[in-house]
Length: 336
Image 1 (cartoon, rainbow, N blue to C red):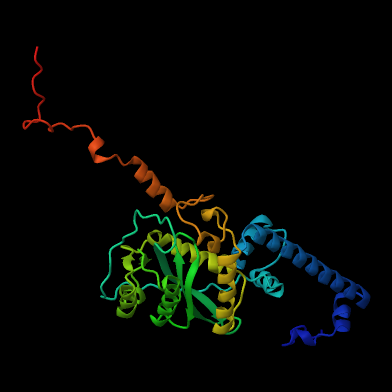
Image 2 (image 1 turned 180 degrees about the vertical axis):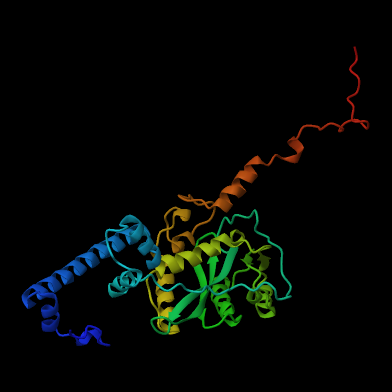
Protein backbone atom coordinates (compact mmCIF):
# COMPACT_ATOMS: atom_id res chain seq x y z
CA UNK A 1 0.00 0.00 0.00
CA UNK A 2 1.24 3.45 -0.83
CA UNK A 3 2.54 5.64 2.01
CA UNK A 4 -0.24 8.03 3.05
CA UNK A 5 1.74 9.71 5.82
CA UNK A 6 4.27 11.85 4.01
CA UNK A 7 5.74 14.61 6.19
CA UNK A 8 4.67 17.27 3.69
CA UNK A 9 1.08 16.73 2.48
CA UNK A 10 1.71 19.24 -0.32
CA UNK A 11 3.95 16.63 -1.97
CA UNK A 12 0.96 14.47 -2.82
CA UNK A 13 0.26 14.66 -6.53
CA UNK A 14 -3.33 15.07 -7.73
CA UNK A 15 -2.99 11.97 -9.96
CA UNK A 16 -1.90 9.81 -6.98
CA UNK A 17 -4.76 11.04 -4.79
CA UNK A 18 -7.30 10.42 -7.54
CA UNK A 19 -6.06 6.83 -7.98
CA UNK A 20 -6.24 6.19 -4.24
CA UNK A 21 -9.82 7.42 -3.87
CA UNK A 22 -11.12 6.25 -7.23
CA UNK A 23 -12.07 9.57 -8.81
CA UNK A 24 -11.06 11.19 -12.06
CA UNK A 25 -8.83 14.29 -12.21
CA UNK A 26 -11.67 16.16 -13.95
CA UNK A 27 -14.03 15.46 -11.03
CA UNK A 28 -11.33 16.53 -8.56
CA UNK A 29 -10.76 19.90 -10.22
CA UNK A 30 -14.49 20.51 -10.53
CA UNK A 31 -14.90 19.87 -6.80
CA UNK A 32 -11.91 22.13 -6.02
CA UNK A 33 -13.39 24.94 -8.10
CA UNK A 34 -16.71 24.68 -6.30
CA UNK A 35 -14.88 25.04 -2.97
CA UNK A 36 -13.21 28.23 -4.20
CA UNK A 37 -16.54 29.64 -5.30
CA UNK A 38 -18.16 28.68 -2.02
CA UNK A 39 -15.36 30.36 -0.09
CA UNK A 40 -15.69 33.52 -2.18
CA UNK A 41 -19.45 33.55 -1.60
CA UNK A 42 -19.00 33.19 2.17
CA UNK A 43 -16.44 36.00 2.17
CA UNK A 44 -18.73 38.29 0.14
CA UNK A 45 -21.59 37.60 2.53
CA UNK A 46 -19.41 38.31 5.58
CA UNK A 47 -18.16 41.52 3.96
CA UNK A 48 -21.71 42.80 3.46
CA UNK A 49 -22.52 41.92 7.06
CA UNK A 50 -19.49 43.87 8.34
CA UNK A 51 -20.40 46.91 6.23
CA UNK A 52 -23.99 46.80 7.46
CA UNK A 53 -22.92 46.74 11.12
CA UNK A 54 -20.45 49.58 10.52
CA UNK A 55 -23.23 51.80 9.16
CA UNK A 56 -24.95 51.39 12.53
CA UNK A 57 -21.81 51.58 14.66
CA UNK A 58 -18.79 52.95 12.75
CA UNK A 59 -16.44 52.47 15.69
CA UNK A 60 -17.23 48.84 16.54
CA UNK A 61 -14.14 46.62 16.51
CA UNK A 62 -13.79 43.54 14.35
CA UNK A 63 -13.85 41.09 17.25
CA UNK A 64 -17.26 42.28 18.42
CA UNK A 65 -18.63 42.12 14.87
CA UNK A 66 -17.33 38.55 14.56
CA UNK A 67 -19.14 37.57 17.77
CA UNK A 68 -22.33 39.13 16.37
CA UNK A 69 -21.80 37.22 13.12
CA UNK A 70 -21.42 33.94 14.98
CA UNK A 71 -24.52 34.69 17.06
CA UNK A 72 -26.65 35.56 14.02
CA UNK A 73 -25.45 32.70 11.78
CA UNK A 74 -24.46 30.03 14.27
CA UNK A 75 -23.83 26.73 12.53
CA UNK A 76 -24.58 28.08 9.06
CA UNK A 77 -21.27 29.63 8.05
CA UNK A 78 -17.84 28.24 8.92
CA UNK A 79 -15.88 31.50 9.15
CA UNK A 80 -13.38 31.56 11.98
CA UNK A 81 -11.95 34.53 13.82
CA UNK A 82 -8.72 34.68 11.77
CA UNK A 83 -10.51 34.51 8.44
CA UNK A 84 -12.97 37.17 9.60
CA UNK A 85 -10.05 39.43 10.64
CA UNK A 86 -8.40 38.86 7.25
CA UNK A 87 -11.57 40.01 5.49
CA UNK A 88 -11.61 43.21 7.57
CA UNK A 89 -7.93 43.92 6.86
CA UNK A 90 -8.20 43.03 3.18
CA UNK A 91 -10.96 45.57 2.63
CA UNK A 92 -9.45 48.31 4.85
CA UNK A 93 -12.28 48.11 7.35
CA UNK A 94 -10.11 48.11 10.43
CA UNK A 95 -11.18 50.67 13.03
CA UNK A 96 -8.70 53.53 13.33
CA UNK A 97 -6.08 53.09 15.98
CA UNK A 98 -7.24 54.36 19.35
CA UNK A 99 -5.26 57.42 20.32
CA UNK A 100 -4.01 57.91 23.85
CA UNK A 101 -5.25 61.34 24.86
CA UNK A 102 -2.58 63.54 26.42
CA UNK A 103 -3.24 65.56 29.54
CA UNK A 104 -3.18 69.26 28.65
CA UNK A 105 -3.99 70.71 32.09
CA UNK A 106 -1.65 70.42 35.06
CA UNK A 107 -3.20 72.11 38.09
CA UNK A 108 -0.85 70.59 40.69
CA UNK A 109 1.86 73.22 40.30
CA UNK A 110 1.80 75.26 43.49
CA UNK A 111 1.57 78.55 41.59
CA UNK A 112 -0.88 81.27 42.68
CA UNK A 113 -4.39 80.82 41.29
CA UNK A 114 -7.38 83.16 41.04
CA UNK A 115 -11.11 82.91 41.82
CA UNK A 116 -13.78 82.35 39.21
CA UNK A 117 -15.14 85.81 38.35
CA UNK A 118 -17.53 84.72 35.60
CA UNK A 119 -19.89 82.25 37.28
CA UNK A 120 -22.87 84.54 36.69
CA UNK A 121 -21.41 86.85 34.06
CA UNK A 122 -22.82 87.23 30.55
CA UNK A 123 -20.93 89.73 28.36
CA UNK A 124 -22.91 92.41 26.53
CA UNK A 125 -20.18 93.56 24.16
CA UNK A 126 -16.78 92.67 22.69
CA UNK A 127 -13.65 92.61 24.86
CA UNK A 128 -15.49 92.06 28.12
CA UNK A 129 -14.66 88.36 28.52
CA UNK A 130 -11.98 86.27 26.86
CA UNK A 131 -11.84 82.50 27.42
CA UNK A 132 -8.71 80.43 26.84
CA UNK A 133 -7.82 76.77 26.57
CA UNK A 134 -5.33 74.29 25.11
CA UNK A 135 -6.11 71.18 23.09
CA UNK A 136 -4.04 68.55 21.28
CA UNK A 137 -3.78 67.69 17.58
CA UNK A 138 -2.29 64.44 16.27
CA UNK A 139 0.69 64.29 13.92
CA UNK A 140 1.18 60.89 12.29
CA UNK A 141 4.79 59.73 12.01
CA UNK A 142 3.72 56.64 10.05
CA UNK A 143 0.65 54.42 9.71
CA UNK A 144 0.62 53.38 13.38
CA UNK A 145 2.81 55.89 15.26
CA UNK A 146 1.94 59.43 16.22
CA UNK A 147 3.01 62.40 18.29
CA UNK A 148 1.10 65.43 19.53
CA UNK A 149 1.23 69.15 18.99
CA UNK A 150 -0.82 71.62 20.99
CA UNK A 151 -3.22 74.36 19.93
CA UNK A 152 -3.75 77.34 22.25
CA UNK A 153 -6.90 79.36 21.59
CA UNK A 154 -8.40 82.59 22.96
CA UNK A 155 -12.05 83.32 22.19
CA UNK A 156 -14.08 86.48 22.72
CA UNK A 157 -17.09 85.19 24.63
CA UNK A 158 -19.46 87.82 23.20
CA UNK A 159 -18.54 87.65 19.51
CA UNK A 160 -17.43 83.96 19.45
CA UNK A 161 -14.37 85.20 17.52
CA UNK A 162 -11.02 83.42 17.79
CA UNK A 163 -8.81 86.40 18.60
CA UNK A 164 -5.60 84.57 19.45
CA UNK A 165 -4.10 81.20 18.61
CA UNK A 166 -0.79 79.37 18.48
CA UNK A 167 0.43 75.86 17.66
CA UNK A 168 3.45 74.42 19.43
CA UNK A 169 5.21 71.05 19.79
CA UNK A 170 5.06 71.16 23.61
CA UNK A 171 2.89 72.45 26.43
CA UNK A 172 5.35 75.17 27.33
CA UNK A 173 3.97 78.58 28.32
CA UNK A 174 5.56 80.21 25.26
CA UNK A 175 2.73 79.09 22.97
CA UNK A 176 -0.25 80.29 25.06
CA UNK A 177 1.73 83.53 25.47
CA UNK A 178 1.93 83.87 21.69
CA UNK A 179 -1.86 83.45 21.48
CA UNK A 180 -2.33 86.09 24.19
CA UNK A 181 -0.05 88.58 22.44
CA UNK A 182 -2.07 88.10 19.25
CA UNK A 183 -5.30 88.78 21.17
CA UNK A 184 -3.89 91.87 22.87
CA UNK A 185 -3.54 93.57 19.49
CA UNK A 186 -7.34 93.88 19.55
CA UNK A 187 -7.26 96.31 22.46
CA UNK A 188 -4.12 98.31 21.66
CA UNK A 189 -4.70 102.01 22.34
CA UNK A 190 -8.10 101.41 23.98
CA UNK A 191 -8.48 102.90 27.46
CA UNK A 192 -12.10 102.10 28.27
CA UNK A 193 -11.60 98.34 28.44
CA UNK A 194 -13.03 96.36 31.37
CA UNK A 195 -11.88 92.87 30.44
CA UNK A 196 -11.76 89.50 32.20
CA UNK A 197 -9.49 86.68 31.04
CA UNK A 198 -10.89 83.27 32.05
CA UNK A 199 -9.02 79.96 31.86
CA UNK A 200 -8.46 76.71 33.71
CA UNK A 201 -5.83 76.49 36.44
CA UNK A 202 -3.16 74.99 34.21
CA UNK A 203 0.46 75.89 34.89
CA UNK A 204 0.68 77.85 31.63
CA UNK A 205 -2.08 80.28 32.67
CA UNK A 206 -0.79 80.50 36.26
CA UNK A 207 2.82 81.12 35.18
CA UNK A 208 4.49 84.38 36.18
CA UNK A 209 5.01 85.38 32.52
CA UNK A 210 1.36 84.95 31.60
CA UNK A 211 0.05 86.65 34.74
CA UNK A 212 2.48 89.54 34.27
CA UNK A 213 1.27 90.20 30.73
CA UNK A 214 -2.37 90.21 31.86
CA UNK A 215 -1.60 92.59 34.73
CA UNK A 216 0.38 94.93 32.49
CA UNK A 217 -2.69 95.28 30.30
CA UNK A 218 -5.05 95.79 33.26
CA UNK A 219 -6.97 92.58 32.55
CA UNK A 220 -8.78 90.89 35.43
CA UNK A 221 -7.81 87.25 35.95
CA UNK A 222 -10.41 84.52 36.42
CA UNK A 223 -9.83 80.79 36.71
CA UNK A 224 -11.95 77.68 37.10
CA UNK A 225 -12.30 76.42 40.65
CA UNK A 226 -12.55 72.71 39.82
CA UNK A 227 -11.66 70.25 37.10
CA UNK A 228 -15.19 70.37 35.71
CA UNK A 229 -15.06 71.22 31.95
CA UNK A 230 -18.38 73.07 32.36
CA UNK A 231 -16.50 75.79 34.25
CA UNK A 232 -14.85 76.70 30.95
CA UNK A 233 -17.50 75.33 28.62
CA UNK A 234 -17.22 77.95 25.88
CA UNK A 235 -13.51 77.29 25.43
CA UNK A 236 -14.12 73.54 25.46
CA UNK A 237 -16.75 74.03 22.77
CA UNK A 238 -14.41 75.84 20.39
CA UNK A 239 -11.83 73.08 20.89
CA UNK A 240 -14.44 70.54 19.83
CA UNK A 241 -15.55 72.64 16.83
CA UNK A 242 -11.97 73.07 15.70
CA UNK A 243 -11.05 69.37 15.86
CA UNK A 244 -14.31 67.64 15.00
CA UNK A 245 -15.65 70.06 12.42
CA UNK A 246 -13.09 72.45 10.95
CA UNK A 247 -10.20 69.95 10.94
CA UNK A 248 -12.34 66.81 10.72
CA UNK A 249 -10.80 63.98 8.70
CA UNK A 250 -7.48 65.77 8.16
CA UNK A 251 -4.33 63.74 8.69
CA UNK A 252 -1.19 65.73 9.47
CA UNK A 253 2.39 64.57 8.94
CA UNK A 254 4.20 67.57 10.45
CA UNK A 255 3.53 70.66 12.52
CA UNK A 256 3.75 73.00 9.52
CA UNK A 257 0.72 71.26 8.01
CA UNK A 258 -1.15 71.77 11.28
CA UNK A 259 -0.30 75.48 11.44
CA UNK A 260 -1.42 76.04 7.84
CA UNK A 261 -4.69 74.14 8.40
CA UNK A 262 -5.46 75.99 11.65
CA UNK A 263 -4.83 79.36 9.95
CA UNK A 264 -7.35 78.48 7.21
CA UNK A 265 -9.82 77.14 9.77
CA UNK A 266 -9.64 80.26 11.96
CA UNK A 267 -10.17 82.54 8.95
CA UNK A 268 -13.22 80.55 7.83
CA UNK A 269 -14.60 80.31 11.38
CA UNK A 270 -14.28 84.05 12.04
CA UNK A 271 -15.34 85.44 8.67
CA UNK A 272 -17.66 82.95 6.96
CA UNK A 273 -19.18 80.43 9.36
CA UNK A 274 -22.55 81.53 10.83
CA UNK A 275 -23.16 80.96 14.55
CA UNK A 276 -26.52 80.13 16.11
CA UNK A 277 -25.51 81.81 19.39
CA UNK A 278 -25.03 85.20 17.67
CA UNK A 279 -28.12 85.38 15.45
CA UNK A 280 -26.48 83.42 12.61
CA UNK A 281 -23.89 86.16 12.13
CA UNK A 282 -20.19 85.52 11.70
CA UNK A 283 -17.95 86.46 14.64
CA UNK A 284 -16.50 89.30 12.55
CA UNK A 285 -20.02 90.74 12.17
CA UNK A 286 -20.78 90.30 15.88
CA UNK A 287 -17.60 92.24 16.71
CA UNK A 288 -19.36 95.36 15.38
CA UNK A 289 -22.33 94.92 17.73
CA UNK A 290 -23.16 95.94 21.28
CA UNK A 291 -25.88 94.78 23.64
CA UNK A 292 -27.71 91.48 23.86
CA UNK A 293 -27.73 89.49 20.64
CA UNK A 294 -30.58 87.33 19.42
CA UNK A 295 -29.72 83.67 19.92
CA UNK A 296 -30.95 80.62 18.04
CA UNK A 297 -29.12 78.46 20.56
CA UNK A 298 -28.39 79.16 24.24
CA UNK A 299 -25.82 77.25 26.25
CA UNK A 300 -26.86 75.43 29.41
CA UNK A 301 -24.62 77.77 31.42
CA UNK A 302 -26.26 80.93 30.06
CA UNK A 303 -29.76 79.48 30.45
CA UNK A 304 -29.01 78.64 34.10
CA UNK A 305 -27.68 82.17 34.77
CA UNK A 306 -30.74 83.79 33.19
CA UNK A 307 -33.13 81.55 35.14
CA UNK A 308 -31.30 82.33 38.36
CA UNK A 309 -31.49 86.09 37.76
CA UNK A 310 -35.16 85.85 36.87
CA UNK A 311 -35.86 84.27 40.26
CA UNK A 312 -33.96 86.91 42.21
CA UNK A 313 -36.21 89.28 44.19
CA UNK A 314 -34.97 92.73 45.22
CA UNK A 315 -34.20 92.81 48.94
CA UNK A 316 -36.49 95.80 49.65
CA UNK A 317 -39.46 94.00 48.12
CA UNK A 318 -39.29 91.01 50.49
CA UNK A 319 -42.09 90.74 53.11
CA UNK A 320 -41.19 90.93 56.77
CA UNK A 321 -40.25 87.56 58.15
CA UNK A 322 -41.24 86.31 61.55
CA UNK A 323 -39.15 88.19 64.08
CA UNK A 324 -38.92 91.42 62.11
CA UNK A 325 -40.76 94.46 63.54
CA UNK A 326 -40.76 93.40 67.19
CA UNK A 327 -37.95 92.25 69.50
CA UNK A 328 -39.75 89.09 70.60
CA UNK A 329 -40.72 87.98 67.12
CA UNK A 330 -44.38 88.23 68.12
CA UNK A 331 -46.80 90.58 66.47
CA UNK A 332 -48.02 93.45 68.65
CA UNK A 333 -51.52 92.96 70.04
CA UNK A 334 -54.38 94.21 67.95
CA UNK A 335 -56.59 96.81 69.65
CA UNK A 336 -60.12 95.57 70.11
